[in-house]
Each structure stands twice: as C-alpha cells, then as structure tokens.
Length: 508
Image (tube, rainbow, N blue to C red; front, top):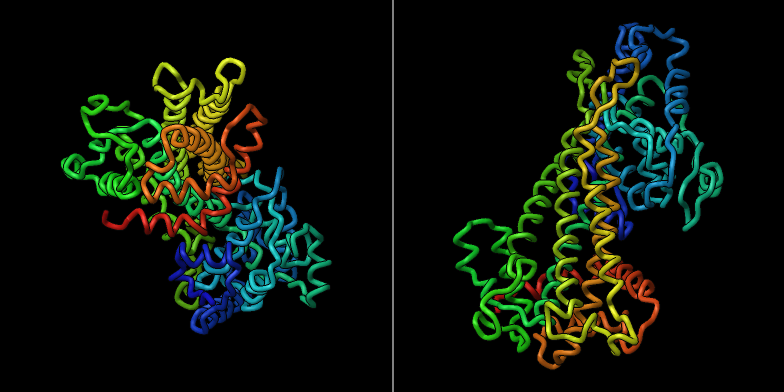
C-alpha cells in the first residue's frame, strides 16, 4: 500500500498504483492539514471576507461578489460549465493517475477542501472507478480546467467512468458500490479543477512508456548490430569518457554488455573501417535522448508533489494568495523536450531499417525477401517506418511556444501543456511501431547470419520475439506482425524490460 503525504509520491509508486492497482491510503498528518485548511475557508465565509473563488466569480468574473447563500451553487455551476472537453477519452491508466495526482495535491493542506472530498477521491482509486475524461479542451493554464471538471463531475455522481472494464454512468457504479455523491461547498469546485494534473498524469504515463521504450531500443539496435556485423569499437569506453556525458557512457556500456560474446559483430578493420552513423553513433544519439528523459523525470517528480490550485491558503487562513501555480509551463516545456527525444529514437531506428533492407548497403538478401523479385519482403515496412518518422516530425513541433488569450484576456498567456503531453503520447506509439519494424528486420537478418553466433543476451531476446513474429518465409500481411510486436513491446515494458535491463548492466 502506498501512503500519500502530498510530498513524497514517486514515479515508481505511480507505476505500482496505475498498472498494478496497488491500494492507496492518506497519512493521518495530511488529513489533519486538510481539516485545518477547511476550517480556514469556513472562517473566511463566516467573516464575509472577499476571497477569489470562495465568494467571487471566476476568471474575468473575479470582481463579481457572490451572495453567501449562493456559494455552494457557484461551485456546482463551475464544474458543470467547465466540463466541456471533447474528443476521445484519456487512456484509463492516465485517468487513474489524474485522480491520484489531484488527491496528492489537495492533501498538502493549501486548498481548503473538506476531508470527505479527499476520501471520495481515495474511494475512486481503491475501488477502481476511473473518470472518463475527454483529451481535448485544455489550454494548460488556469490549470487543466476542462479535463479536471470531468473528473470532478464523478464526485457529484455525474458523468461517466471506467468500471470493471466498461464505460458506464457514474450513477450506476456508485449505486452498485453504495457510494454517496458529494455536494460541493465553498471553494471545493475550484480546488478540484485548478491544477496541472491532466498534463502531468499524461506526462507520467508517457515517461513510464518512454523510458522502457528507450531500453528496448538498445536491445533492438543490438540485434541490428549483429545483423549488419557492426563494429564494436564504437562502444569502447575511452571514446565516451573522452566526451563526458554520463548517459552516453551508460548506453555504450549497456550495448557492450548486451553484445558480449557475440560472434556476429566485428572489430575495426576486419570488414570495414567504420560503420554508418546510425550504428556508430547509437550511444551519442540514444544518450542525448536519455538526457532529455532525465530532465523530464526531474520536472514530473516536482509537479507530482506540487500545490497547483488557486488561491492557496496559508497561516490558518490569515494569508490567502491568488497566484499562478496552475500554469503548466514547466510541464509543457518538459513534454516538448520529451517529444524531440522520443522522435529521435524512431528517426535513427528508421535509418537502421534502411541499412537492413537496402541491398546497396549490405550483403543480406534484398529487402530480406525469401524470393527477391517475386516477393517484396520488408520493402514496404521501411515505407511505413518512414511515414511514422515523418509524422513524428510534425507532432514534435513545440506546443509550449503557442498561446491564445482566454477569459476576456484575463488569462492572457497559457501553456498548451496538455497538447504537448498528448502529442508526446502519440509520438511514443509511433516510435514503438518503428522499433517493432526494426526488430522484425533485425530478427530476419540475424537468422540469415546464424542465430547460433548471437550473444547469449540477444539470443534470449531473439527467442522471445520469435514467439510473436515468425520468420519471413514468404510475403504476408506484415501490418499484423508490426502491430503484434508493438503490443508485445508495450505489454512487456513492465515485465521483461527490467530483467533485460539488469542483465545488460552486468559487467561483461
């Protein structure tokens, strides 16, 4: 069980909660802070102090004072009016992460919610009720207003949820489980939707998938090294120590360990003096992407434990400050950085695919075909990879440099961070398919060279992958192979990647 404090949530804990459905609890100290913060809000209401979002309108309506009798209706109206997201829903694991992150932020004790709000969010996690949240409609400043409003609707017994593998009305799931909807009181609606939890939840899932994909890219490129009889000297530690980037050195060391014992790789001068960049520069290119992923991880770990709503309540309610912690710029830039990093894994992979299939660049059967000419083999798989890489170039255009004013220019600079996180997710899916194509081609190449000559590590990978994609003995619908292997890679991110990663890190 993971105990939330609002301060200590880690990416590893999120992986367990979102993918293994580990139970969650709230620390008693955090619940004490929640209660104290709520008492401060109630004191403000009783004293008739004018505080944004408690007894005023929102955005451009911040100067409109709300009658004390209407403060609860104000919160309900806020949620319903702001729940205007559109498009396909976020994946269920993202929705679960969104609930988790919003709960973790609220229990820091700066938001003024009642304990029952935290308890109900906890129920959603532990009972497997996940809001259906449309992906599109957030500007990423004033927080993820539209997505988080769809999350908040569920607490009211409205909207739809993922429950027991299906999408159903929230009311149905609540009735089955005996859960009572909440009635929002002063500030609670605003506290629920002012935050960056949609972009951050998507970003966390992106990072989990991207980091596993990065390790997989090393295993797949190692297969290609063997299929093309690549030169191992490029991974010599002296080269990488001379430059000094830790991530570059780490990739080179892992590649050396993965390929240790291979009789398919070569040494400098044996068959050629040097390889093309897509082989020789694997540590430099993959290492640079790892640098970006490390940066993204740092920002996510801060944001996961941040108070991002507005206003924030300090000193028992004596200090209530309207600020801008809801602005998603830190995550927007991080997601744009991630987009570039993952796009490059696919870009260099596509170039390795070309070297595997192009008869002018190797001594393998043309296009790895069983009957060149009569059968096209992997020819068009390279086309598909090129198309995905080109699409990634468009998706990698930064979202964070864009801004469209909203709320009558009161909110005149926004982050577009949720767009950046969504596009990063698309790039990851495209990159996984490109790597699946490289894997199919590399499997065929090493089979031609001699599986018995592979390193023990790559041979183990080969045997597992061959259970998913058989040898190319004749032309078939390769689309099915690509999708099966991509699904296998994603499914096994959290199963064998870790064991292979540890094996690759062993000193050869």
